[in-house]
Length: 265
Image 1: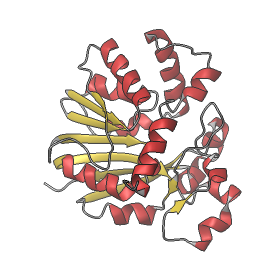
Image 2: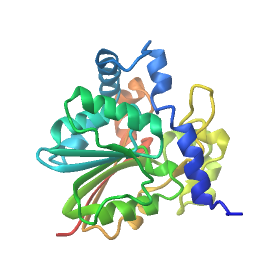
Image 3: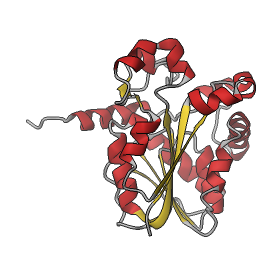
């Protein structure tokens, strides 16, 4: 009888949970009931309006003409944006639903349907293969951000760049909902209980994501130490009015940490 490891257990839970794409709850609120090009365009317009800072990070990667990998696909809004600019776009996700949706999006763009089901802890790509890797809101669900970073480093070309977003342990949301959990273990990443995980990600059945890990600026800098250059920023104070009124606070207590890492030449 084989024994299932903790990592395998998280992978299996994620395959089930994320088969309902991240963004499905929002799509329902927007009245989107299909994956037509028109419906997806409606979703994408809302998404980039709500997260206007995203494109500035993508633009820093100089995607045009590059070989790009996206890890963690959600509703595929970012996938369409990256694929439209990249010379060659690949995508991976642990679950079938996001992979199928992104391949549908790629067909709309007349791009090769190169989205596949893979674990980002064991990518099926050669060393030094990609110019850019992008992962927005994925690594903190996998059970080990550190393994994700190590694999991204392996498949990234010398001089290539990794952009990833993870949840900020010291965000305004956490300070309001679970301040004690932050200060009891200030240096290490924090794995959330189901009660607190629900505050970050839930599905249409109101179930929390199986695994949510929060890290600090110091933690992400530490696990990215192998890169030649690491740039870290904070974004997002939960909703529109907070984002505009509390813009300066978002730079310190933002919900999301954006990290751009450059591999040495």
